[in-house]
Length: 399
Image (cartoon, rainbow, N blue to C red; front, side, top):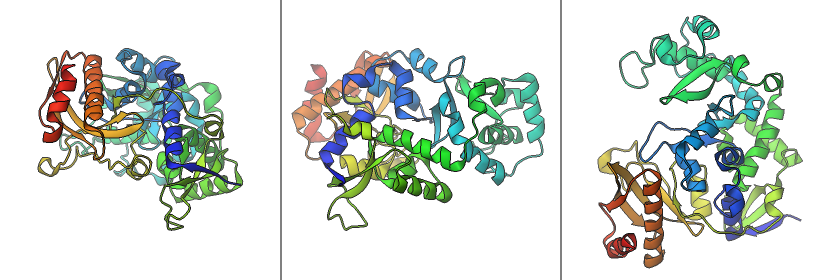
C-alpha cells in the first residue's frame, strides 16, 4: 500500500533533506553540505556573495568563506564543475555518473557555437602546459558581447563538456582547466557506466537531496533529455533507483484532477524518522536547490519565485537579485540586497500575504543582521518596504 503524506509532512522532509531542519544537517560543514545536496549551482552574479557561497551559508550560518571555497575547490580535487541542473559544483566521486552526458556532447559535436579547428591544438596545449586558464590560450572573448566567445574559449569549454579536460578549481573566478586524467582520481576514470547505470545512481542522489519529489522534480534536478527521462521512468517503475512511491495530499496532480494528491517518490531513509529540530532563518540564493525549480517551489511552499536579474529594470516587481526569506520552515518574504561599504542595504523588502506582521518582521530582521555580519557589514539600511510593514521592521532591526 502506498504511503500518504500530508503537504506539511512532505515540506518538513524536504527541508531536512536540504539541510534546513535539525542539527544533523550542519555536521561535517561545507564538504558534507555538498555531498548532501549532490549539486550546488554556479552563477556569475555576485551581490552579497557568489551563489555557491550563499548556499553553504544558508545552511551553516556564518561559516568562513575560505572554508566554503576549500570544500569546493581543493587540492587534491574534492569536486568538479559540470552540467547537472545547470552549471554546478559536483562531488568528485560522482564523476563516473555523468558519462552519459559526456557521450552526448561528444556525439553532438556542437556547443552553442560551431566547433573551431583549434580543438586538438588547445587539448595539446593543456597536455603540455596545464593547468591553464583562458588567459593562457588567448582570452575568452572576441571583444563583443559576453556570448561572443573566442575560438579558444569555445574549444576549451567543449573539451570540458566531453570530459577531456576538467575544472576542479578556480582562481579569481576563472576556471582552471586540466586534463581529466591528471585531476580525476584514477579509480573514478576507470569506472565506465552505461546510460542506464548513470541514471539509476543519479536518481538516488537526486531523491536523497530532494527528500520527496515528483517525476518532474527529478527530471529537472538532473535536466534529463527524453532518452534518459525514459530510463528514469523505467527505474521508478522497477524500483531500481531506490526510491519508493508516496502520495502527497495537497500537491496538485494534473493526471488525476488533484483528487487524491500527487504521486511522488521519496528517499526511504527520509521516511524512517519524523523530521525534528530547529528551522533555519536565512536569506536564500535564488539559485539555491531548495527554490531553483519554480513549479516545485510553488507546490511545496505556495511561493511564486522568479529571478528578475534578467528582466528590464522597469518591469521588475521584487528586485534585481531577490532572495527568498526562509523562517519557521516557510518562505515568508523577499529581500533584494546590496552592499554599500559596511552597510547591508535592503533595496526592497516584502512579506508574503498571511504572514503575521510582527513575527515576520522579526524573522526578516534576524535574517538581515546575520547576513550583514557574515559579509562584514555593521549596519543595515532598508530603502523600500511595504508601508504596513515599515514600522514593525524598523523596530525589529533596532532590537
